[in-house]
Length: 103
Image (cartoon, rainbow, N blue to C red; front, side):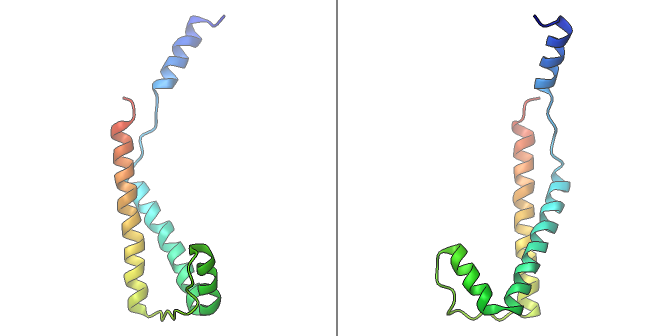
């Protein structure tokens, strides 16, 4: 048989939840995806045929005949897109989570 104190503590813990910090999650997501994007671009720049063969396997489509030229402009544009897009998505998820979580 459980003590009365233990039951109150268990009920208190079940109502407790951690709110997500929207700004922190967005920044962390932008940094992480930006880092992964940079690694991908380096892989394409250093070994384009191997990169296209690898991505062909992952995406189940033949990309080996495609030639991808990486310029500073395309790198910056892609970095912005692949950092800000997921960051905004993470912010949306955090706000939804915080609004739907029990109070």
